[in-house]
Image 1 (cartoon, rainbow, N blue to C red):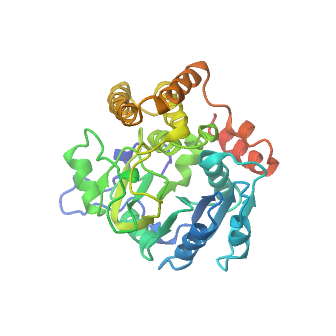
Image 2 (image 1 turned 90 degrees about the horizontal axis):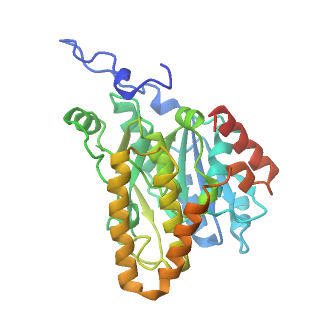
Image 3 (image 1 turned 135 degrees about the vertical axis):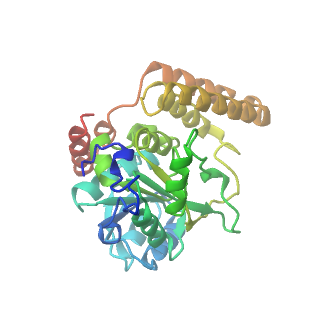
Length: 342
């Protein structure tokens, strides 16, 4: 099957009386899965994340850890963990976005990943998390580009930072396809735990490293799912062990700059979303920002204005340029982006 085939062309027996729809990913359980973890100064949480990966019922075939120039013992924790991860120590902190760009590229270029399982260092997957994603993949009657886990906080509540809405306008057939695989159709996914189709990343490119933090996953999975199918799998559970229960806008502080700049970049400077989606996402985002301004008043107004001006002034720099201080990582990123024509 071509990796450029539209989702609806992946059915092999649809509409034939007496036949059952074939799964679109019959080799799902045997394909090569590489986990990618990005860490910065969270040694204890990183150890818990790696422990969770080591305890998987179906362990990843390899693990890549991107140490974002941590100043604590995070790099040593990754190096010495018995999981035996491929640890990359960057020379400068390029944020979660830069770390994921480098890590996904490394998984594809140096570990020949079929699927890349991405997560933050404060994500602790429960033992059946990966197996549930692969079981859903193997049950899907249509080709999938992204599968996402259910993220809960430490008390078991669904984490508001990682909620994913059902795909707007999903047809009854799309919903049936998703239900057959044990999930629901989604349009974007959080990098707290997302399984990315390696073929699609090679074809469509990596997340933008210049986002630094926030909305890199929104834009990238939006790109992968503009014409692909995504599935949220509630039986795949990870704990997102943030310090507080809330979303990214609960107490943004100076990081509000990235929230504003990056969301505008994603909606105005990419083709990851349709015109209607840009309007709907933009309206929802604007309402969220108004709520932030109402709660924090003048504390973030100037920060947000700087984000608007930065987004209007220029778009994100090439990811290889952002990672220029780390030649090997930049070379991996450049290889994937060139193949994708980006």
